[in-house]
Length: 81
Image (cartoon, rainbow, N blue to C red; front, side, top):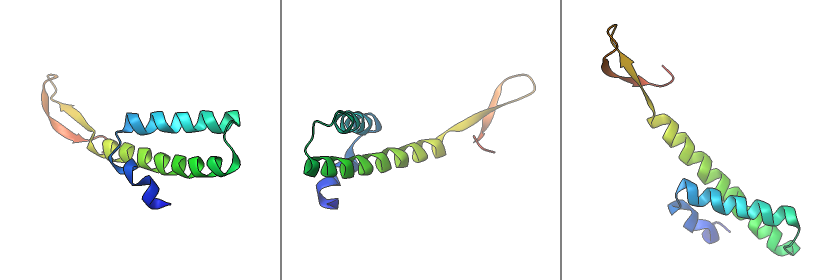
């Protein structure tokens, strides 16, 4: 099944989230037959993992601007520092 979801690796966060929302809607509506529901659920799990990974990467890149006593930017530091 992993090969069927290889395209997920190249999706942007927004595109993956849109697909995930579509899958959730389809599963909640009960419109899909059982076999299709299982397949799209598995894709949804892969999309969720991809989105979580992209968010972790983005969070690691966010930095906080440090200011001098005068209020001027003097550098950056990790957000969680």
